[in-house]
Length: 130
Image (cartoon, rainbow, N blue to C red; front, top):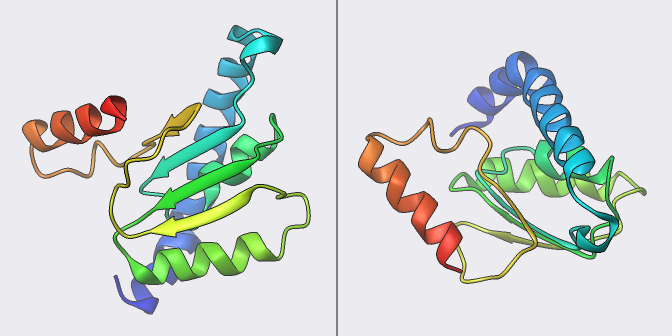
């Protein structure tokens, strides 16, 4: 993605993306016990970091691994997250899916952005196999 495309995405999608993720994570919070609170996050297709912002509404994460193919989105996420003092998690940014365990994995809209169902299924398998 180019800077202009990222800005267009942010202007059009970021509020909706955050709202969806915040609602889903809020429902998840109601389903899990206090002994199962996530401490680590893997966000595949992190975009500008909306998944971490939404997760931060409910849990005090110790670490977050954010993955996005776009260096512009990763840079933008780093800049945004650095400005938010409520984000206390240790952050790692990657271009490729790492072999890292996490208590909570987010793929948000990433599965739908895959070219084929087979690619989406393979990505899902890779995330769950860690």
